[in-house]
Amino acid sequence: MATFLMNLVSPERLLFAEQVDQADLPGTEGDFGVLSGHAPIVAVLRPGLVTAINGGERRRFVVLGGLAEFSSEALTVLADTASTVEEFDVAELRERIEVMQQELTQQPAGDEFDRAVARLDHYKSIHTMLTLTTAF
Image (cartoon, rainbow, N blue to C red; front, top):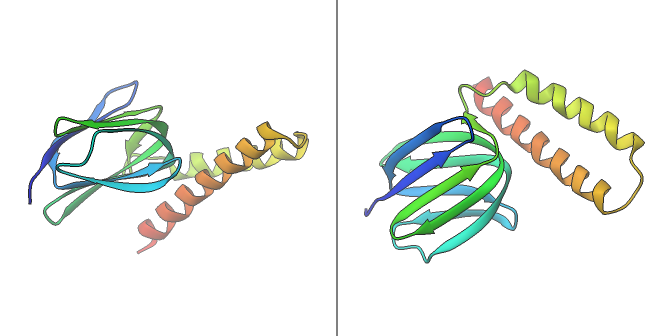
């Protein structure tokens, strides 16, 4: 299978820079995969998991938003915040979710409320995925 270069960058550091067969990304319009030869694309990322696949090996990262650009056989993910699944603090995420839930009770209905609910749902989804995968 043809490979391409994938770079995952957070403001703090370069987390990943390797050749991969496939990358799966959490887009705001839905999850999507990138293979070698994919049409050029720029996509906004929502909070979720990024998976880099090379052969049978999968590397997973938690991103809390950002941008992804694929062109010229290279994928660059510019994450707002990112870490490896192993380094990610699930307990801190749980605390953040609790604070977000409390804040929602104080917020009036409207577009900002809807965005806050969507972000909370994404964080809960990350928490569920990480809790289920680390429980086994």
